[in-house]
Image (cartoon, rainbow, N blue to C red; front, side, top):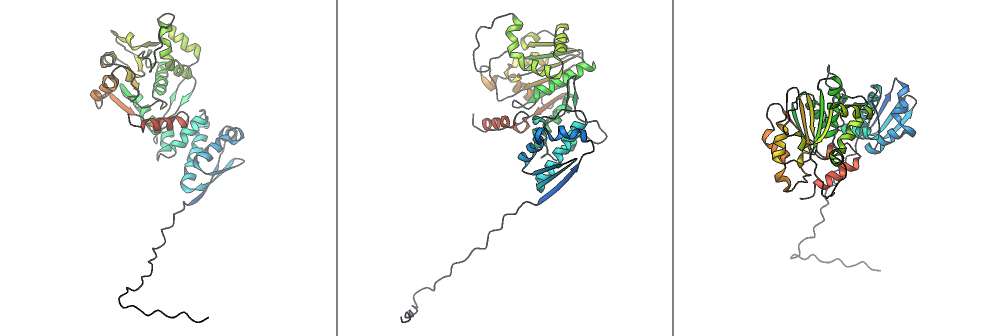
Length: 351
């Protein structure tokens, strides 16, 4: 077979251009691997630290994408550098909580994992240097903050006269306020605990409710009872309600009163009218503290947001001396992690 004849060059024909090869893309930078070893002195706490069948360690593993190996009184953590650091801080804080006699459940661990992304995790749990830890002590438990915003809120609860706590469900607005109120009632810094909320139906008409006035309004106030029972033994709650030390009532019952020497909490405040909110705030008396909790995005009264007394009050009073305003977001939800994702999904949709 002969050679293929060479084609003569055409002077009018442009020379063939060789394809230009683009340089190789910058390789994806792999996260640096790391290893951390933790040793714990008090071996009696390791069972509670690890959890049944190491469930607590598995929870940290799954959430942070690390490998954790328990060997006697030692834990070895391996994985990406940042995740190992977060897992180390989380487990150390879990151990510290147990050493202080505090409870450790899956919800608390989830909160500590979320807080491990904050640069001030150690300060959140331990408090600032030479200052006591940030916590609220009640008869049934010791409560520590589970998010950075809760730290600010708990400080405001101990400092400000009137606090507006705004944000979605599950962020601890009402629960922490009730815990602080119970703590002050136990120590005697206030003489009464008054819990109130508007009796507004959330999107449905319940019709006639049987029983006396207490029977009719109690269903609306049940979340406040739940928080109380979590902070005090039920028999003490009932005894203090009977004696008048604890009062749970709809906001309509506040008119004409001066609430002195009391810790006063208004829940679901977004469902108050402007007139109700003004009436409630002006009940404030000597040696009292008042917390107004609500979610401005969940207004159930006729007229919607424009008629809500909460937004109106915050707009008028934010920044005034003696008032504190704390804003929670979906990132502060301390219930099951899926609750935070639900809140984010709904808040991300246009109204």
